Length: 108
Image (cartoon, rainbow, N blue to C red; front, side, top):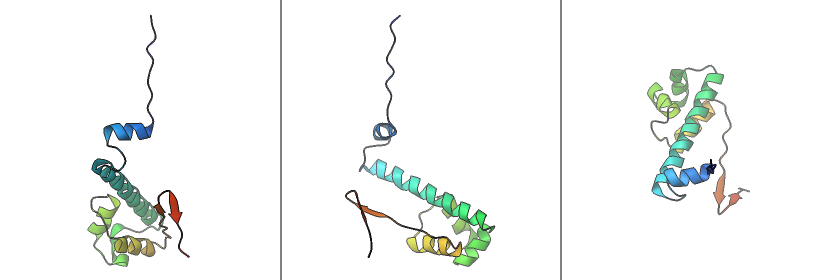
């Protein structure tokens, strides 16, 4: 019996095939949703480590509990200002990296 060769694919190849090529609208939407999900998880983890409820964090930030819930579950997009307020209230450092044409930009 002849053995059938099994083809393997990298994660990047699978994303290209099933989500869309890098730069396509579908791929950009996927990457954005993924980043928002990660951001929501970071907010939730930091809040829990500070032993704060969503309501308590909301009061520190000046937003309703529902806004914190939406941030944590990635059900809405937040402004940078709101995200910074949340991390400030959590006494957490947040760092942004900007990359242009494969080179990180550093501010002097």
